Length: 114
Length: 108
Image 1 (spheres, each protein chain N blue to C red):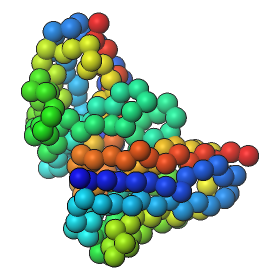
Image 2 (image 1 turned 180 degrees about the vertical axis):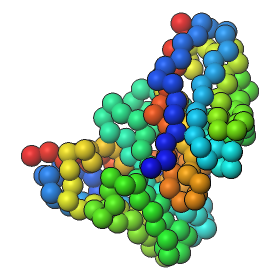
Image 3 (image 1 turned 120 degrees about the horizontal axis):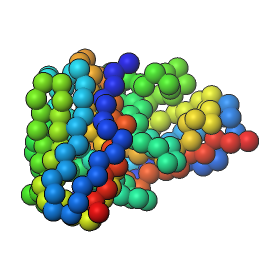
Image 4 (image 1 turned 120 degrees about the vertical axis):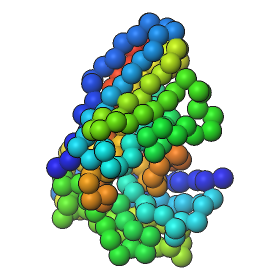
């Protein structure tokens, strides 16, 4: 059974940093591009970043470029999102997954507020 | 940056056919995916690769794509289908993905 467990969210002040983790199981993690998406309260879904199977390519939505870094550890079946210089508009539930996103975790809530 | 455009809302009576469109310049060459999200819940995949239905999704859900528009069709919509629906697809490079703005389906 595929499981995706996101963690690392919390309350952080503007300008602060957080590192999100995603523990994956039930599928061959190293075979898939992995993705972070987010959903701000009361808003729609937003693609944030993705990373190639071997970590050699990564892409970001313009609004997080230069502030967020996606990474992975295939030995640990884990995906990460390092978030720096956080802004109020980064407040959202963050989900990890792989296209076609037929499996979703519970997400982890990031709140950026003073 | 690339955008997918959906109507903000669609309303139908129970038993009618609901059609939700998604417009994007790369859709002639890229697959569309559709998700249903009910209030307070994680999204659920209802259509992948334009027209394929995952196991467990009712047959009344179908998808199609023609030119720059993908369409999610719910034939004989039911009250329980009330939800937000999002399309998802990459830009022409295939590297940057985007969700449509979402469509609120009302069935009443």
